[in-house]
Length: 77
Image 1 (cartoon, helix red, strand yellow):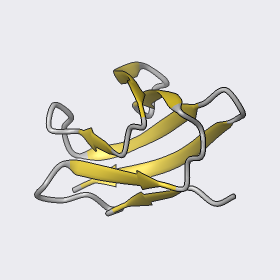
Image 2 (image 1 turned 135 degrees about the vertical axis):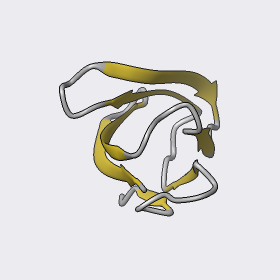
Image 3 (image 1 turned 30 degrees about the horizontal axis):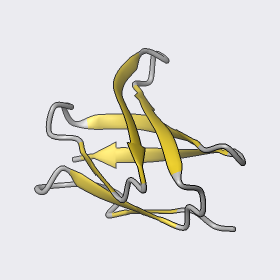
């Protein structure tokens, strides 16, 4: 299964949409380039994540479900 996170790069809206997850609940973590956790969200059927609290830069998103974990790079412009 392929996980899609869009838009990427992220500009004005500061919201990302996640498609391709088949589990019922998720744990989403966002890390900066230093590996520091900068945002975290727990939820059921999470589809959108608000990133308005983050500054421009490169981040890594980790999405954990009961079946597997996904890791992607995201860019905020």
